[in-house]
Every structure is written in structure tokens, then in C-alpha cells.
Length: 351
Image (cartoon, rainbow, N blue to C red; front, side, top):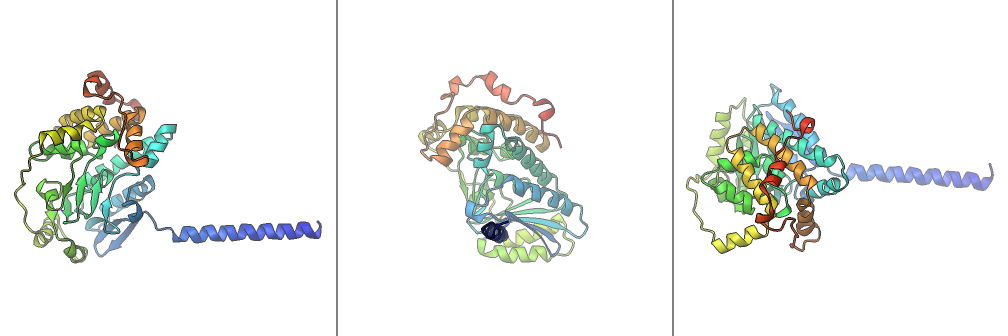
């Protein structure tokens, strides 16, 4: 081998070594999307993507689920607390852009994300240990699924709750078909169809949160919770009650008919009809059965076109001018809606 060849080889080896070192350095600086830690007698889940409002992705789901099941069966773990990092959001929803891109090309992510997210939602709903969600900041879509099925949901004056899926050609999933129709009156249907935002105390008044605690008291509340010795659900409830300002009465606020019509006219007609049927059916179904139904609906949306157009208009191009197909409620046939609820055979969601 010539002298120049040796020099080139040494240079190449050094270059590759530097590249590997740089990649290792970069990977070590990347914060994990979710932090899972044991603090006192509590298992603590911290949603840790504050730069993207703690959006939930599949790797995070795959970390949370097994750890939640482990804590549920651990005699030294008495409660589970879930919270969001950064102060702006608990969790603003699922990583919809990634699912959109996957759905366009038939990538399995479009199936896996919804399947595993719904399995996690069910695990939260059936968790035998007291599950306490501190829903401070933006709580939408996937963030609702991480919180609302748990035994305790604590809102603060910074909480902003919404299920805005009909605006992107989807439907209020993550078990929305179970908890929304169980809110008083027709409030759940209103929230589902319009994506209306509840703020602060109204989140508890509506029944979405079980407690309302001032934001400045949350660190003290967390400290007391993790220091409790072998607490029961009743013990946790007493602690939460001691921190909250009692809010019993739901304020009745009239929404002008013209404003309601304008809001609904911007939503996907197909999504509106699917959502109406979803909530009507879900009112008498178990959480598991609702999630099976919603998985079928999720895959129907992946096969359609409104979801991709909605994401384009609202999240990508942001022109807020989606071209829905069909474009009117009258054009959405009952047969088309019914097909969205059809069994997927061996691809159905199972628990």
C-alpha cells in the first residue's frame, strides 16, 4: 500500500471516529420523551416533550404501558401520578403528523399507533392503583386519553381542555365515545362536535376533572402525595379535597346559534356524522367496547381522505380552508357512516 493510500485510510478512519463520537454526543443530549421514576411510594410519569407541547408518539406509549402494568402489580407502588413537563401543556395530543405521513404510504404506524394508544387508555381505565393526572396546561386528544380514564384528574387555572378532532377529519377518540356521553346533559356531544375549549375551573365544572387546585399549590400537592404511606383511593381523595377550591355548580353559557352553525360548518361532515353515532352508541358501552369501536373508526379515517386534508389545512399549510369530500352533511350517506363501524376481522383491537 502506498504512503498516500495509508494517509487516506487514516484520514477516513479518523473522520468516521469523529462522526461516531458526534452522534453519540448528540444522542446523549436528546431528552427522553417520557420520564418514568419511582418517588416515595408513587410511580411518576412525566411527559417530556415540552418543545412540541408534549405530543404523544409511539415510542412513548411503548415505554409507559409496560411500566404502568409493572407499577400496578408492585406491592411497593401505591399510586401513579402523570404530569407534563414545561408548564405549557400536559399533552396537546398525539403525534398526528407522523400518523398522517404513515397513513399516506400504508406504513404500519397508522395501525400500530392507534392500537397501542387505545390499549394504554384501557390500562389507565382499569388500573387498580389510584391514578392521578395533573392536567395543567393544554390537554387535548391523546392527552385526554392519558388522563380522563384515571380515577383522579386535577385541573388548574392553566388547564385548556378540548377534543378538536372533527376539525381535522377525525373523531374524538382515545375513549371519547365513553366519557363524553357521560357528561351531564348534552355537554359531551357539544364538546365532541364543536371542539369547544374549556378553561380552568370549567374543566372541573364540566366533570372532565375531578378536582381544581391552584397552580401554585401543585408542587406541594405532589410532595404530599408521594410521601403518603400505603394510601387508599379514599386517602388520596381526602388529600386532593384539602387542596381544592370547591366548585359544585356548572355555569350555563349560551352559545349563539349563528356561532354554533359557523363552527359546525367548518368541520368535516363525515366526521360530524361518525362522531354523533359514536357517542350515541358509546353511552351504553364499556370502555373496552368503545375502544374496539374507535379503533375501527380510526382505520376507516386512515382509508378516507378528510383526515389527510384536515391535517394539511390545520397543521401543515395552516390555511384553515379544508376541502371536505363529501362537502355537506346531506352528501354523507348512512351506508358510508355504517361502513366505518364495520368489523376489521382478525385486525380488530383485542385486549
